[in-house]
Amino acid sequence: MASAAAASSSMDASNEDGFDLYESMDITSQLPSSVELESSLEEAVAHRTRLQAELDSLQAQFKGGKQRVEDLTRRVCILLQTAQLEIQRKDAELQALVRTHPQHDRRANTSLEHQHRRPRSPDRRPRRSRSRSRSPRREQRRREDDEGARGLEAARRR
Image (cartoon, rainbow, N blue to C red; front, side):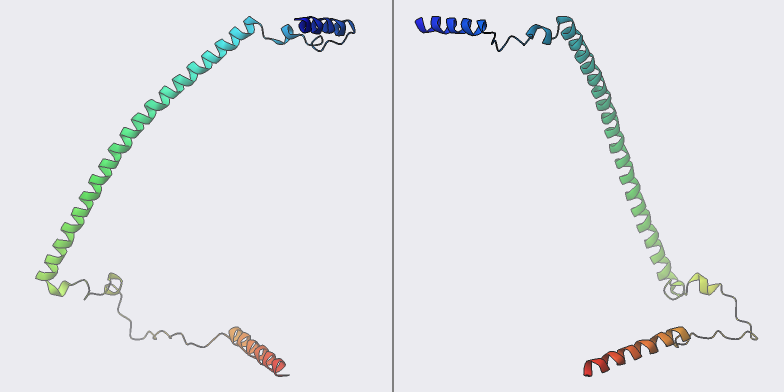
């Protein structure tokens, strides 16, 4: 206890010297008032209530959207199955027609484009086939490339 008394007397002595560490700090002015705390709490509660309402709304939209997606998926699957069955039915029908009428085989006929072509008139000249000759410009480039290659070969030999 004697040491505690000595410590307090030394603190009193330091206070007398004007050296107080906590003197410049005004703690009460830095703390918010109860009115400010209450208004802040009310704002936080209102914000939470708005967020909760938004969350509920989004969850309801998600649930409705999920049901709609499931319904659309089911309908698309049914349409796909129907289309596949229709294709199988038509293919079987075509196969039966090919068996009963072999002259109408799709592979034996030419395409519709060739079936409806006008006959060629006798005074019309036949089309010229494209020759494999190169254009003069290409021919000139080929010669230049050949000459350049020969020049490189000659330079390598030296």
